[in-house]
Length: 490
Image (cartoon, rainbow, N blue to C red; front, side, top):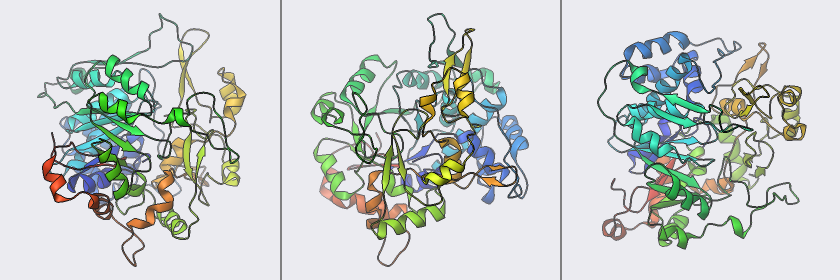
């Protein structure tokens, strides 16, 4: 769902309908800071800050970033420190507060659980982000784009505010290198707080091997899996084996990339299916296959409550109506080396001319790669940064070809584009699953927009009342929402 496309408004709407609304946890610190610099329209961030359990931290964050009435349109947003193995206190405070507020707002006005989704590839903010979400009572933590073996243990430690560690992946690291990130909640909050509820942990996977590995080697309980296919939006797991491209230049997926659901069922862990499952028929198919439900992202990304810019929603809905919508699985766009789904839309970085005109700037740094320098220290590089800079850090020039700055593009997608020199404004780049072509099925007759309620009603139309009462199945999820047969929370 991209950064803040699945925002607190959308997650709240979905959870109030009895499904599991899931907020995106990616880059919430910079998003929160930009909301404050835009003057906190509606006062929602202030409302969340007022509930933060350590008021002095909340006030420091407010004082650093809030601009009454909002910044001038052509004034750039304040630059934040970039994350590192030992991030500054200012950034840790912002991470904790931002994740707390997003989850708090998503939970407001109902008693149903809310989830949060993180990317394993974006490791540096993990610990303070997870702690902030847990302070707000998040019910589920979902994580994909990697092998999140250590997250269950972090959840266990944070329930009693105990210190937690996370091992940073560092290219070229040696056995005796210090790669351990640490977050000590009691030192951070400076007081005793009551124990927290441990959220359930759901790993997002794309292979039977990874499911088995997670169950055998994770340092805590795995409460379920989302099995995500290659038609899902955002980052896709790379095809197994050597990367091959079709005539259009897209990654080719084959039988080796198909998960064996019979083997998944044998693991006796709840699972949800994702990637092209955003219809009543596919939900029925998933339930028949033994799934607890489905994860749906694309349908919700274009509904009224999502954080995606209205002009992007309207333009892509119009393309879908006229049969012109297209999604390209770009093997090179993401600095992570994972294929990335890009909706083709004029005026965004999906257009070659606009991408070519953008200066190569990397100033947010969420997708940077940590690497060991010749002197044994840890530094960071991004294949979307200036080529000479990347190469000077030991990167290979061929890795820079076609790379796009997803961080700045995702901020532009949600209406917070950075302005440079008072002139250049960052363009967005919309990610979507292949199901973009079919999203018009959620439009009510004669309407040009639809809501989360419309999506859930259509998805759940396959589930009759007898099925609801005859079987106890945990909630569904989605890349903003999980949908399943029986919505009682276990």
